[in-house]
Amino acid sequence: MFKKILIPTDGSEFSQGALEQGLDLAKLSGGEVTILYAIESPYEPFKNYTTQPPEYFEKLMNDFKAEAQKVLSRISAEAESKGVHTRALIVEEHPVPAILEAAKEHDLVVMATHGRKGIDRVMMGSVTDKVLHNCSTPVLVVRGAAG
Image 1 (cartoon, rainbow, N blue to C red):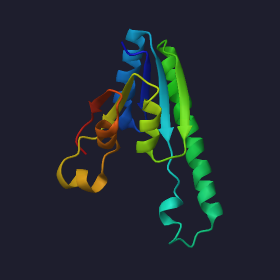
Image 2 (image 1 turned 45 degrees about the vertical axis):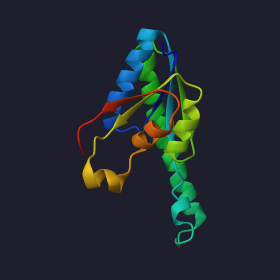
Image 3 (image 1 turned 180 degrees about the vertical axis):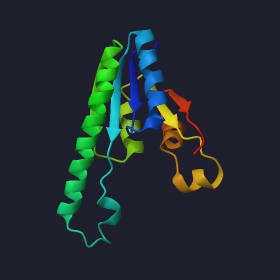
């Protein structure tokens, strides 16, 4: 059974379904959960084009980290109330490689998908899709409403 479960999250209401499924699985299997929050630097894509000083992006990153910590504290409290041992992890990296790397140390990855189709999927991309097709660890995809 699954003893080490990775649940990537962005803290959105949308990701709540995957979180609940992952916590339930961990409780049933007596496993533990790692909640992963990946933060991509807002500076990297624009560093050659921006007139903003690097300090501006540093403040943004600090704000993102504070929000991530708040989300992870809430999720950890929710998990502990269900009797599930959790570990919270904030990674400063694009979500796909961060999830793929963390998955190597887990038995299962539980993720949400927006269920986008057509041009929305092409334009928006899908972290879940990229993880699903590149991960050697089993991935449980919890479908959300089409967006």
